[in-house]
Amino acid sequence: MNSKIQDGDGISQSARILLRRVFRILRGCRLTDAQLRVLATEAVDEIAQIPDSLPSRVTARQGLMCCDVVLRWRRDCSFLDSTGLPAQLSMEQSSPSFVELVGTAAPGADPKLLLATMEELGVVRIAENRKIELISDSVVACSGQEGTSIASECVLEHICGFLGSVEFNVFDKPSRAKGRFERACYASVPRDLVPIIQQLVSTRGQDFVDVIDEWLARRAIRTENNQESLLLGAGAYIFVRENIA
Image 1 (cartoon, rainbow, N blue to C red):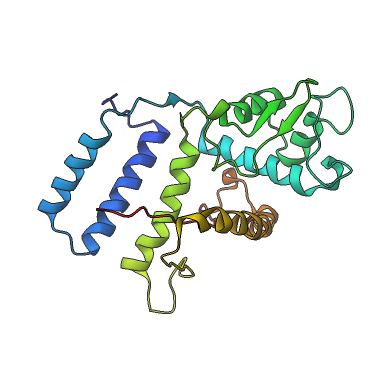
Image 2: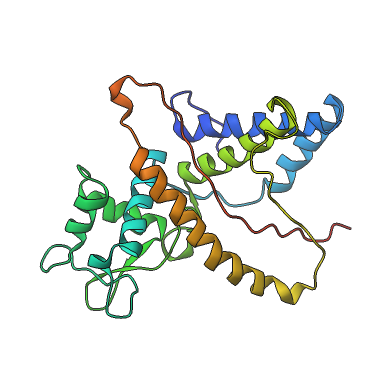
């Protein structure tokens, strides 16, 4: 495994934040320093044999632009087919085109570079008719082109965001009533019910995320305006925990 960490690397910075939040949360759950060190060593030893994922050039900012494109593609009737699903798009030969979609959803972005990014993430593919086809509703849920594992900064950013909410709830909320991401539920159920809840959360969760995404898009600001800003988001998740012997 590659042990070199460069300070300027976005993935390395996100990984530092992720690990710091994980261990701070575990420490808040009353694990001792000695226990944490043992657990960390055991975890590294357990995953040492996992092959390295393919390096990804996709930055968190590029991932966000891809999210904007996917949302517009799914929700704007100009880019839907007669059945109400995202239409297959030519690059620019006919209207509506992928170039028009990018111009609407991510003004200023290079359509060819963004297409390459979305292909790398596994969000789109080139169909047999040479048109561009949307194959995933979510950028974060993609595992890479043709299912190949990739090291994506936007995935780390997403996990860091979720853990940040948990960390806030454990350490920083001013009162019992002012936490973040407190609406969650769990139950032990038969394994064959997992696909059913996956479909339920996929449908209703995507609708919820789309509403939040549109709300955020209307209020997004450019960081170069010298206005103080932070990254804000929400998500819908399925938690599946295997039985531990």
